Each structure stands twice: as C-alpha cells, then as structure tokens.
Length: 244
Image (cartoon, rainbow, N blue to C red; front, side, top):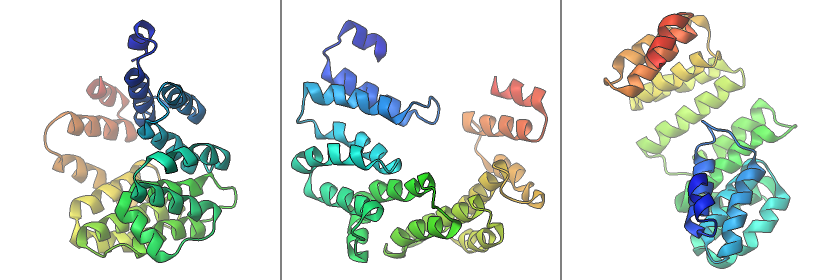
C-alpha cells in the first residue's frame, strides 16, 4: 500500500486501506497508535464525510484511554455514523469516563456493536490503578447483561477464565474452564492451552498442549502450532525447522 501511495499519493481509498492494514496487522507489525491515527487523519483531510475512517481512531482512543483523542474524533462520528453505532460508542466511553451507564445501555451497546464495549474493557490494563478484581469486573459486566445463550455463555466463560489466569488466579480460572468444557470442549482446551503457553498455568496442565495440537486438522495452522510447541518445550532445532 505504501508503494501504491508513492505512485498515487492523493488516492483516498489507498490511504484508507493502509490505515486498515496497519490497525489489523498490529499483532504482527506493531505500530504506535498515533502513527495509525495519522493515516486516518490523512483520509479525513481528503474526505471528511467518510465516517468509517473514524472507527479505528476511536478504537485506539478507547483502548488507550485517550480522552483527548476521543473528544477529537467522536463529534464527527456522531454527525455521520448510524445512530446505533453512535450510541454504542458513547456507552463504551461512559464506562471509562462516566457517567456510569445503565445495564440496559450496556446491553444495547453489546447488541449494536460489541467490539466497542470489548475494547473499553481491555483498556483497563492501561490503568495504573487496575487490580485483578477491577479487571474482572469490567469483563463480567457486559457478559452479565447479555443473553445467556450457549454461544455467548461459552465466550463469556472463556474470556473470564483467561482474565483470571492472567491476573494470577488460576484456581478460579480452572473452575470456569470446568464449566466451559461441557458447552464447548475445544474452546475449553484452547483457553487452557493459552494459559500454558503464557506461563500462567502450573506445569501439571502442560500436557493439554499436545492434545490440542493433535486435534487440529492438517494444514498450516496445525504446523505452526506444532512448531511453537517444540520451541516452548525446548526442541528449538525441530521447532525452527517446522516454522521455517
């Protein structure tokens, strides 16, 4: 996309796709939040009515608890985006900066566009005052007001178990994983496997990695997992060979 924009520097869609790419590839190629929002600013300077170019700057404002950035982008989003999305963003922001929204507002935001609420919840890790209880509370709240369907319940149990594991509360995480297993065995195994990979579970749980990898259908994802398990278990030569 950068090569394309060197040839066509005024192409609005080119700048937009570059911003989208930078945002969604952060796990593979990290970039400072300001460098991503700068790309979307270049889009908006060329087409101020393109409200999708406001979405990821607002995502980043919520994720990093950046009130100044939120105040800069939200008024334009409010004028141009569909009302349900506007309401969802406003509710997500209220969970960070107040006034505290009602359960019904949180439920409506989860139904309209859940990722705004999820990103606001993940922002708790940016807070210097965060504790394991406050982290768990913000993840439990949206799940508490959502319909208790099997799909949503299994997702809620998976997320909360990983939050507990990540804050050093493995015994409580194990209880939720035991509840998750009858609903979605593969998700329970996967969540447990991530806790092992990240060093959050005791060594006695480590054998779950092998069972998860063996259950994966043949293909690139299974090969990647097999290589990573080799690396994690100290078989560096074999792991590097597979990953290569």
